[in-house]
Amino acid sequence: MPSTARSIRPTSRVSNPCQRLPPDALKRFGDEIEAIRRDVEAKLGSDDVRHVKRVDAFSRTMEVVGRVLIHVSPEPVSFVAGVTALWLHKQLQATEVGHTALHGAFDGLPGAERFQSKTFRWDTPIDEESWDQGHNKRHHPYTNIAGKDPDIHFGPVRLTEDTPFRAHHRGQLPFTLFVLWPNFGFLMNLHFSGLNDFYFGNDRGEGGMDFLPDRSWKSAVTAHKRALRKYARHYAKEYVFFPALAGPFFWKVMLGNWLAATMRDVYSAITIYCGHVGEDVAAYAEGTRPRGPGAWYAMQVESANNFEVKLPISMLCGALDLQIEHHLFPRFPTNRLREIAPRVRAACERHGVRYRSDTWGRTLGKALRQIARLSRPRPGEADAPLGVPGAVAA
Image (cartoon, rainbow, N blue to C red; front, side, top):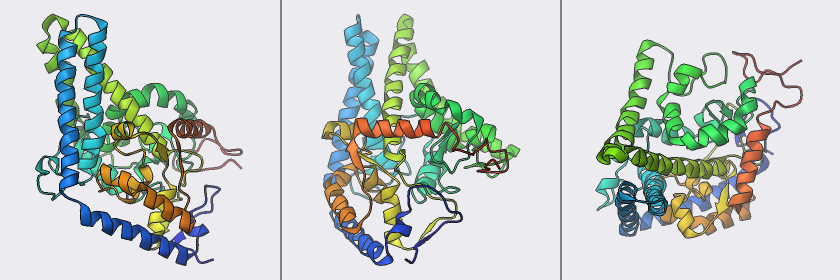
């Protein structure tokens, strides 16, 4: 069977759809996905702008309600209500509104001037320009391709076997649960800005880095500037300005803001990990290249998971419960992803492309089991010495 993708080395990973499916099936699949793209692009316009404006207005209302309740709450019930309202604001701004806007979903649409990707600023501690470089330009075009996608590892956590095992990976499950997820926004900025590269590297060999060309003084200044310009602005607002308005009750406001942000970080992290991590999620060896649109589309589908939730929960996920559709069409508004999901699933079933969708609970279980599995070396695999990625014991 002719291959439409090339891998540098054989691997025991989940089979590449480009090696499993014949070229004519991939071609037909690509044509069908392209037809879905054209149909949606022809309809983009006022309905999409109206949707994001309504969600944004609701979110801003929740921010006002939440901050007022946190400030004036005389007892725990109103304080918890305030924290919940503020979390709703932060969650919607991070996902349904912000993530979608920064992907360029509303660029050029009349009436959506506030949601243009080049000028939009989201309510998270993540630098927008750094996120664009790492997420839009690196992760999405090369999902789960080793050496291209910087998100196959995240700090001391490896998410595929293409990041070689090292001793610190043994603690990656508790690190994920108790450090990474509760501080997801802070650590994502560390990742995308290049600070993690500068201080720790990426575990793929001596000097391995994802976002910085080297550890020169110039690179250090660039990484720190990217990270601090968002950290300083965001944390000054949340933990200095608003608490100061409360005078002697500054501690209560600081606590409420921290709780809302932590809830957003944990919810967002679980959403994203469920969409990308699992033993049956395809990961691609360094050097893998899709040959043609159909091959690329098939690789995108098989390197993601969907999970099934009701519409209100999906909106808090920013439609990332439909990670497959998002990876096929990262610039589509969330309402369009929900609209096309049945068509995408049917196309996958017709052409033999593996479309995974399950309950959120089972999908989360699979993600956690994969993180736990990758915290141990494969049989016969030793800790990889620096400079020799993927070294195996003799």
